[in-house]
Length: 529
Image (cartoon, rainbow, N blue to C red; front, side):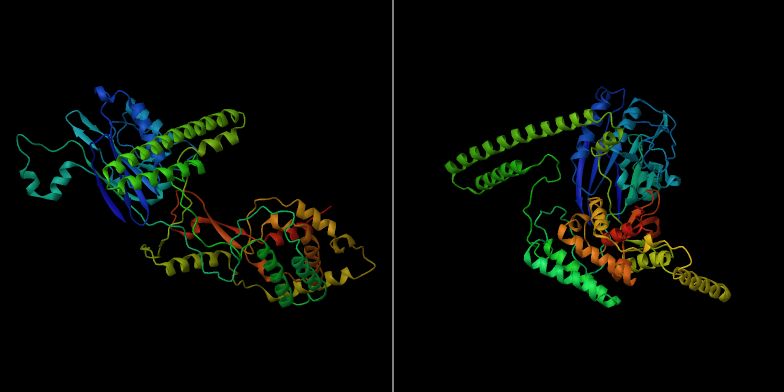
């Protein structure tokens, strides 16, 4: 938790701080419209926008005197879910219009009057009147980290300091005409850690498989053994779970999960830039090596030679970087021009240009007494309790006579199914065919989320798995037994709205990711062809 007191008077200044997460503070000053240096506000905000895009931090905050009066104009587009801002200053000027356009382009918003409007106040007071020209702004994705903003007038600060500050005010000194802005925000947000599931398979990233996948002799022998067990030995839940686990293990082994390398990947500088490639990385490495040799040298003649060598590598790298960056931006422009007819793809590409929304879940919760808790065990218990109460089975009391009536009706329906005098729908009781399994597997869509088994649809499309899955599905259909793992699912929390408190577990919509094999089996049972 940090509290920053900000009052700035520079053109712009960037400060990077490292805490539990990295953030940047950008201080700004834009001269008034009547000033010679304040006539080109568009250029000022253009430089500020490019600076904001180049930042490689978790969150950023811009603050200072913009000399912009924005009245109650919207600083966001209608599709953004941003809290409403209460405006004190209802006047606007040209700097304010340029400021609003900058906020929309940068996907940022003003914090004044948006977090705690009761502590808001005018930021400038003089003989000409009161106005709001000093602001603290932040990207939309960082609003949830901001707790409160306060505006302290010079007179309020003088009273807090005491008589010593009042004694300094005399004929040749006076209180400043700008207020002090204070922002309190969190700096400890991380992705919610997963529970220790050491018995589960690793997360599968691989989705491309060759024609030789699961086609070796050892795999053929193992799959044949599993197929025979599905046909002959599946009568109890334990046998089903054991055989199905062997099937999952052989697929995971062939996908290379057990042979994944644990070494560190080579470090690539500026990998966050979309235009960075291996060629730039190699040139950058050569320039760094030449620089180190130049700095370590102590021989004057040798140092002059190494300096020339370093300058040569540096200039060549700079030219190549500018060339690749121009080509990348030109390609982006051509892509946007070609997709103007398709509005969906056009706006998808537009959204990629600005700062991306963070998918982090704060590692903290609010307890019943209103306190913020950062303890890991308490956080996990809170999430488990809330979702257990939401998805768990609740005891319901009902009439015993009603239960007996339902059970009697169930017995009657089952006896009617065996009555030869009544019409029967044999189509529903036919065995599952290999053609049905093949058709269902072929129609499974790629790049879909996997369940707790971590088996993607791309791996299930292997030709050698068709007969094995057919025997599995037929055994489930004949014995009314399915693997126990199919009863489990992975719950993915998705925020319901940016306006809700991200620290409350029930403000997330739980999306259940079930087994991909189970979805194939359900698709076969629901098929009406």
